[in-house]
Length: 253
Ligand code: F6R
Image 1 (cartoon, rainbow, N blue to C red):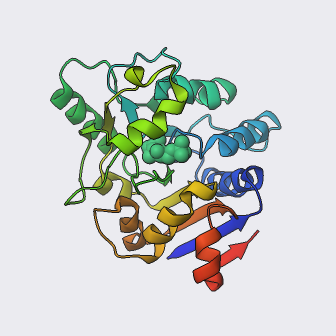
Image 2: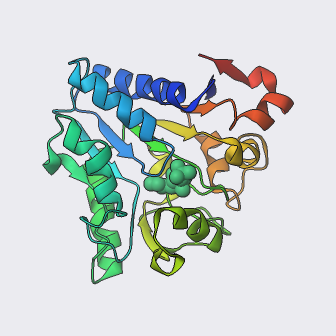
């Protein structure tokens, strides 16, 4: 089942997304969360940090696996996804850092690192909630458009569109990583519940293609429609095309 929950703005989108995470943790305090980085989940993390500070939720028993990490960046590099997770969530909630996992961007043997991360994901015994953003080209994790849906963790060559989109965070383009480790589409799809967050006008076209166009590995996020339980939390801007063409599919909260 696919549910699209709209909010007027980015902040309320973050609250809607945080409600879903909160419900999963309340029902299962030792839930396994698949986590994403990037701008889309930032407001959700901010809201979760606030709820944890108020004692409304606890991450004490939560375990996490992140979707991806740039190749070549150390965990303390301020653009690494490890740094992002510490800065936006781990350092500000009561999670046991030993229970958090990301691919190692500095791994010297990429094939071995993919195997290690597959074993980490498998050892979780199932992801209860997978959080995702969507790339401008429809990627989820760093599964870029291709001829087939990926299965397990892979070393990915980022497309020019992704490198350009990511360059806003780096001082100059030559510093933007061109490769990443990413969980595969099969691993993402194995999650019991999936939460896709999208905000901003720039995502409006691809969101409509992913949710209403052909299901194809050329638009990796389109595969989510084959999952049993998918919730999309988005703002009015990201939903502008869907609201025009499929207004009945959206509920405002
Ligand atoms: C991040 C990730 C990516 C992003 C996507 C959207 O861990 O896996 O798929 O979710 O690139 O990025 P933002 O949210 O910055 O627009």
